[in-house]
Image (cartoon, rainbow, N blue to C red; front, side):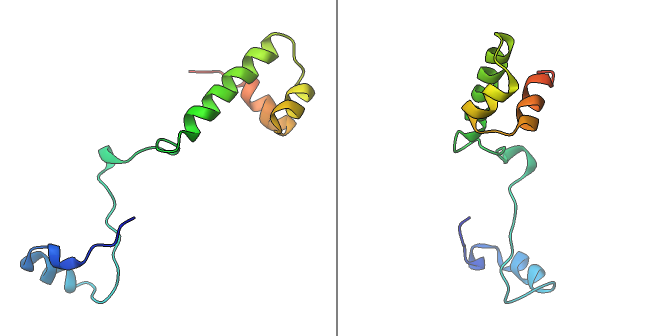
Length: 88
């Protein structure tokens, strides 16, 4: 998040904002359509999706929940959620 001074706002808008608050920092979120989802920038979401595909494949080929737990360092409950949840 980048800090920007309020003097970039038109005078009329700045005076209107000052009616409600002054001398504080205000966070202005991006419009709904411009927000990126979790992991979109870092690639974390794609990594987890690929990992889960691999877990499902290995489970379908006969790997046990316990084996997958040890290989992927996840709890048994996490592995079960991955393999038993229907994929859209």
